[in-house]
Length: 457
Image (tube, rainbow, N blue to C red; front, side, top):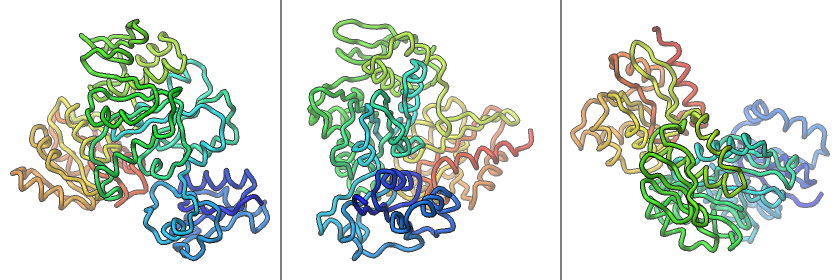
């Protein structure tokens, strides 16, 4: 055995990290507060590994929080994104100077593949998936990983130096990097989020900017020129900076003018395509598209391939996803709207009167701007989850009273269908995370879609 390493959190990224470490010959302790029955049912490969390896190679410590005193056993700790960094064993590890790293740091140290990393408050997933589609259209070997779905570590053993990882990375993952250094990094935008975790806006932004802290002059950093905060924080970077902007030209990067998307490179303006030809709609998606265009272009993908992908890509599940029309009412699944800024963006994209389903896990956000936008477009607000009362309180303080609180999603869809009339849209855009009721936003979105499909025409 090489080292004894603790992996905290037995969800997708934690299990992938544990399996990678085992394949590398390390001794692993995998811990989670969920029960062993639940974990092994979700990840049966853990049982197979435990049977095929020597008993001491993999220890599962499940159903309880591991004691802080055990920290001294480990040479390193890999912490999953959802694990609070204040838990006792991590505090003890810091006292003992034991390294604490994220799954993306572990992956980075075990691959020679090119790393492209995308972060920001909103738009990360669409930009990541669209970038991956451009690589696939160009017939390049690419893994689209991170918060978008599959953990990076899941593909490390099979990856080759010629491959590319396009990774959606969160502030939680970036908090515990050390050497992680993407060849190309992109920040979509920044606005308040996850303040329950980071405590202050400054801490949240500081975590996000770690995406470029190890970059050098040979690396690329792509920034949203329309976001003052992004541009200001980007000044810290040593890497080459490129920008994208709506309705104004940039010297080096992507921009739109008079209905056309351009890419400017070394004094030459390449016309990519007309904005109306792009498959994903709305100003926010146009910014996502420009980011993906730049990553692809600076990765050596030709303009024709970029154009083709922009025109054929129709978006990502759970991001303003059209579900169906029932009795003249459109149903839209925006379960990925996990903060108020994302939900506001979804509301602004709606062109019809809205019945809005919102609420969920409390991330300590202020709901003032959210309610201001609700007052402009929303006929009825249906609230659910842990934040329902807080959102309702803010709404009533701002004289918005068309509110109904429900206990579950079946009731939410039933009320929405009853309130909506022909020409309306029922929008699920919670403005909150899903963790009060579901393991992730994907499950929340799928339940919403299943309920919509049960509605009678």
